[in-house]
Length: 226
Image (cartoon, rainbow, N blue to C red; front, side, top):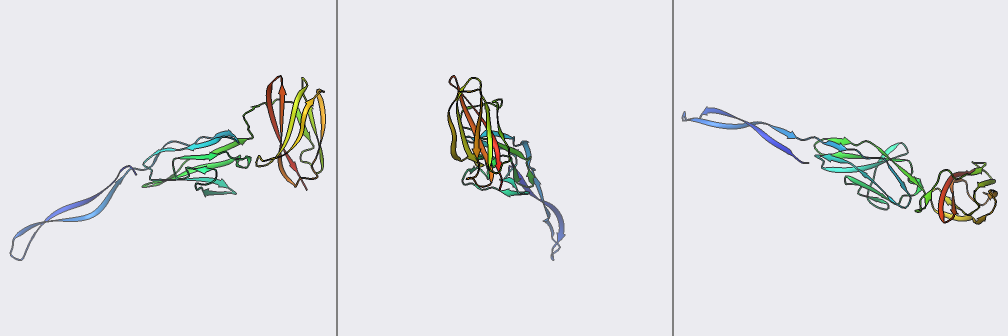
């Protein structure tokens, strides 16, 4: 709270005592508070990061006594606390450190308290699987059917022939196993994927190719059903 000033408003009044002496008495009528309300200068901005980096949400405001960051989950705004990947939950700067893909799409806002209360705008966190390689969205490959129950096909169209690496991750970005690692000599390749040994849920298949020393990556989300 930058400035909160309380003043007593006083009045004077002349009265006579028992000896007829005139006295000047000052008395207080009431308390009056003069305060500065919270003023938000800069709202939190949307964050778009890779899984191996840090997202930082910042709110800039005057006349703030306390901060409380919140996350929107299951239809409710929940107050965050420091711990795990959360840092700065009670400051004007919230950090999400190395979030997994399960944090993708979450909204955050900050509650501000002082002589009044205020709430910042909400901002979204977008997380993509990342490992420092160059991601290309125009790599020609497909996975079908998706969703799948038992088997699916991975179609690769690589020109020129390239070293290809395919890996499977769970929905949190945790590595499960390698599906393919080697030279794809033909420009069109069809690989079989069997889902029988995996429980139902959301997964990510990550493609990494090496074309003349240039590493390019792409990824697809797949759904395995019961």
